[in-house]
Length: 383
Ligand code: PMP
Ligand code: GLN
View 1 (cartoon, rainbow, N blue to C red):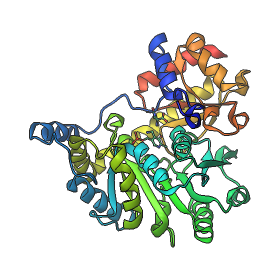
View 2 (view 1 turned 90 degrees about the vertical axis):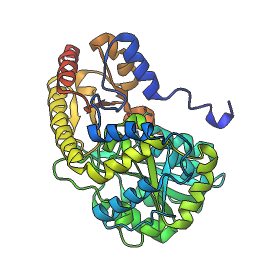
View 3 (view 1 turned 120 degrees about the vertical axis):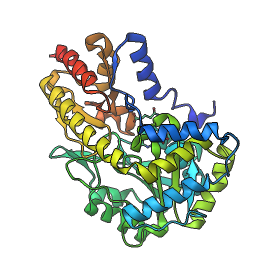
View 4 (view 1 turned 180 degrees about the vertical axis):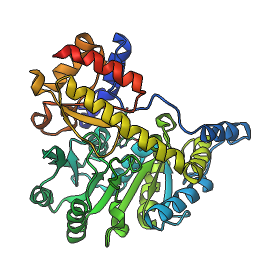
């Protein structure tokens, strides 16, 4: 294994899901729902296979999906991206992020990301032989946010891009327009590209609205906007994502994407096109259901003795484990199956400064009510 990848080992999601299987624990670690996506969309995938959509689709993605993405961005956010040239279908958001970084960063360039950050960012940046500069999100009155001065100080002459994940995994923060304005100003002043990971764009709660960074003044032209179907339609195994950006940026990303995977699976693309066109009511219901599950899990975790931080989006709730007498989340999550028969994710693995997240543990609430209730009942054994 090349030296720049040696630090990465096995992802925490693989480690913790394997631990759940091995111990028969309830898995509130890896974020995947335990219910299916919209039935008509699943049928579309079957129909696509039966009708012969089983050979390589075009590299940029099937036209139906590119068109559906384009129309969806326009209708929802007022953002215009040409289906032909400004939309690129990828193998999930993961490939979109990797291809974008590999396309834009020279060795030695720097990419700013907010820590705790989704684990693939650091690996993609390392593959490009670039450097990740982490700006820390810290809880202020229970909500994770950043210090604008710290963000400004992180920019150097080598900074190429800022990776902005909102709604944010793992903290559940949905960046406000004010926070995004600080980021946008910096991008414009310092000539940075913004890479936005918006895979949880539809999963926000309490009336909090997701604002795409590309909608801010002067940002469409410098933003690579990334999303994916996995979370929106509860099909994380379909690995169908997309990039929206000005043609020149999409061309750069496409050049790399061609040689990572060439193209993405055909049946899923046709089915996701259906989802974007016809399933907004289903997604709205998903969002409402998830908010109830969030409340249920938050209440349960609080009753079990955790300090609970309220997320405004995503699948995840952060907890502080110190009130239970624990100090190290990695140690606790590795023992949690034996202590309580539950698996969770130690947030510290998403930091460049793990000590800043040592006492946080992430729980997923994208699970059936009965599963959440059973997990909570078990976690009450901790106190
Ligand atoms: N970004 C974030 C913030 C995520 O939580 C995930 C996990 N779903 C991904 C990207 C990966 O998305 P996909 O499965 O579409 O590659
Ligand atoms: N995005 C999911 C999470 O954060 C899992 C992704 C993965 O397994 N790589 O839990």
